[in-house]
Image 1 (spheres, rainbow, N blue to C red):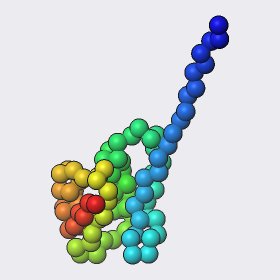
Image 2: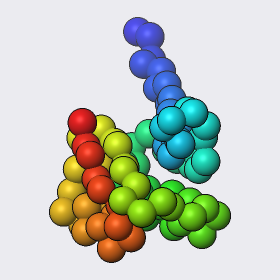
Image 3: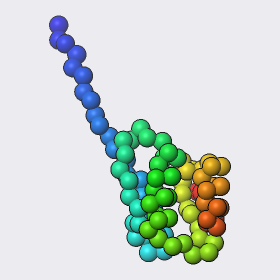
Length: 85
């Protein structure tokens, strides 16, 4: 009889905030693929907030993985309009 062999695969995901008009990445974070997107929002947003100045009523466009009341409240605190797709 053959022994079953186990295979371990390490997967990572790139989380990025980009300036949408020119599609320029302004914040990047690489984490294990099983990390929830919402948990990385704070880390990325803090970095971008400290490195850049936002225009009044800036917009934040993200997919539904970032759709949460906590994230929307944080964005609104900085006068950023959340526009999840």
